[in-house]
Image 1 (cartoon, rainbow, N blue to C red):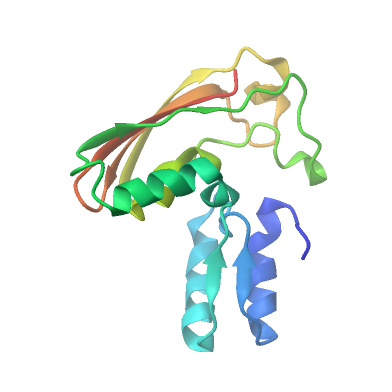
Image 2: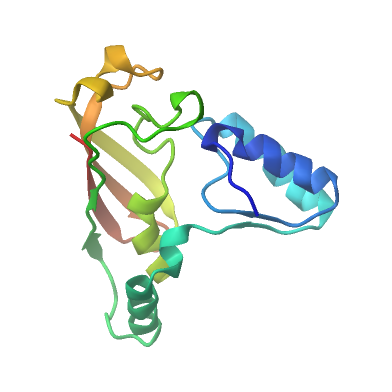
Length: 172
């Protein structure tokens, strides 16, 4: 097993499928562009092979425990939930071509969304984001390849079963 930069995952998944292999990707294969989603979806459908996202948070002990409670009906019917994702680092995390530096909200919706989706198995049908400009110099728009100014983002989402959810993400 090996890991690659997120912007290359869709391309790599397509290559694996072309070689008649199932694909397991540790994070979403699509990074910032829905144009990458359609070819991957079509390749999976036509190949008859399996694509699976192995979001690492879904394997945390606490998420597994909450999934068991949810599945047994212990939470009742969910109508609204909140989650919080705090990912502060004083310095940027080293990454190939600095792909991690300044990543726009929801381009790479991994750990911030994983707990709700991992517990309920739901999916988002609508997402609305609001952001606050970053105070951290390396996250400011002029200092990242995406020109993303946001360091704190809150997103409100509707899920397929009608539930509402709010997740603030903090990077400063």
